[in-house]
Amino acid sequence: MRSRKFMATLLCGPALLVAGCQSLPPQARETACAACPATVTVPAGHFLMGSPASDDETWSLEREGPQHAVVIARPFTMGKFEVTREEFSQFVAETGEIGGGCFDWNSREWVADDQRDWRNPGFAQTDRDPVVCVNWEDAKAYARWLSTKTGRDWRLPTEAEWEYAARAGTTTRRPWGESADAGCAYANFSDQTLKRALGTEPAANCADGFVHTAPVGSLLPNAWGLHDMLGNAWEWTEDCWHEGYAGAPDDGSARSDPGCVRRVNRGAGWNSNPRNVRSSNRGNYAGVYRYNIIGFRVVLADAAPNKIAVEPD
Ligand SMILES: [Ca+2]
Image (cartoon, rainbow, N blue to C red; front, side, top):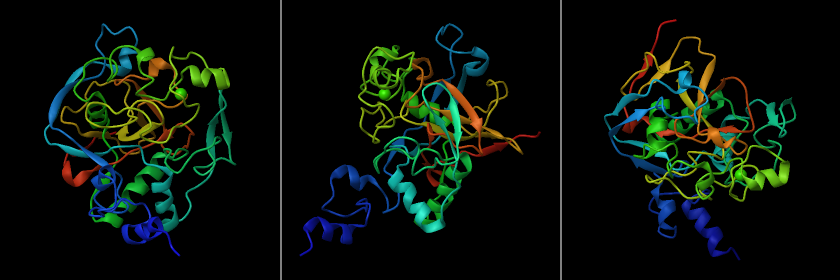
């Protein structure tokens, strides 16, 4: 005899995320469709993007400056979590395997490993962990598939949208305050847990409980209900990498250069130096490569018509 849980799965969809399925907990009913990631609404507003010249924790003010005002004219809808392995597996099941090969962080250096891929990133993951070993093209392909699947227009966040959402109204270095050592309830990064397991340094003087990735939502959200904006997995954004914000748009749109090679990553990951775990920290990787520290989240474009600015070569 089939269990009630199994019947609920039949009625409500395999991911148990269908709107209107009354047997589901309130959090699960936030999603708009079976394949849609859980989302939150990010309010319209404005903020100062980047780091002030007085911030001595930045790696480079040339990268994180000049601090500049950005207006987010309309609310937008953003993934509450990083895209999970379970969510990504639906895309792969319907469209075919993505390419393999992934750069593996062995606690000392990057190793290109053709045996690594999103299913086997080099450490154990649950279905609720963020998918990693996905490149920028994979993330874009997932968003296109999700758009077709759901009839809504999903895309990657712009870099400005990402920092605005990560700050959630705060002006401190981190959404919980200034200190990385106070962040282990909110972010999974290089902490005493990782240091004990792999000897990684530097490490924050607190313990988040995770060596590698954590199931999304394991730690506390920021003030707008977004989990893991800092830590867990770096996240691909739409933007093409520019060293600094000279000429950056002020309306939340992305910088998208023809022939772009390096894309902006935000948020830091499970192995990140605490100095990287800041709202204004920026990273960049070639969009064709896969790393076992990089995943992504998505936003709904049909609720946020910020344009993508195409810049000349
Ligand atoms: Ca950790």
